[in-house]
Length: 86
Image 1 (tube, rainbow, N blue to C red):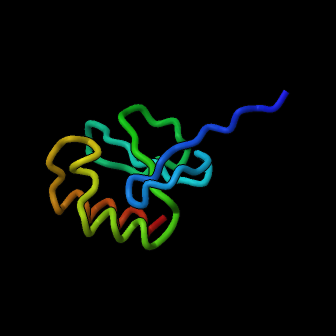
Image 2: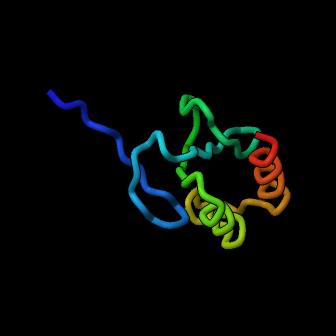
């Protein structure tokens, strides 16, 4: 029997891809984090591991719409810094 591959949609480009090809962003009590393991608790959204999609995420502030809350510029900057240090 063929094992089903979980698919997720990128919040920037809206492309549906296998879950393992995407990066998960999680909203926790402390703020937003990149989830490398895919196992952190909290609401998650997925983004392609592509510079264009990351650029769209920060430029258009897509986390505001996805998580239905106001995300400050500081949180976007810390998320951007945490990705670059990854």
